[in-house]
Image 1: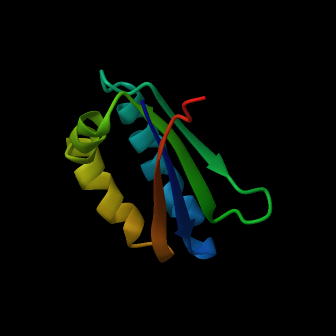
Image 2: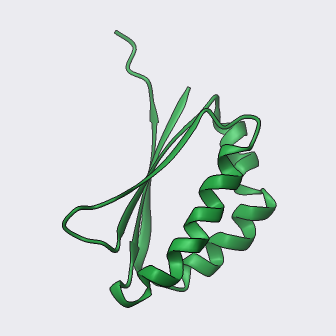
Length: 96
């Protein structure tokens, strides 16, 4: 099981432009057969700070997502509005 935490930082004057792109990305990603969870959150103190919390069965599934039509089309459009680079953390479940 692979958990992904991806933080995106959008210029405040671009947030409304990016929202429909995020909406399409979330909808289409949730429809992917290997997507276990894909949620997008907005920081209460910073409306340009978006956090994706994703769950995939393995790295191959995440890689397939990153090659999908919607990802390769939408992410470059979103990235045009970043105030700085996205921070992505890949995490494994803690084995107790």
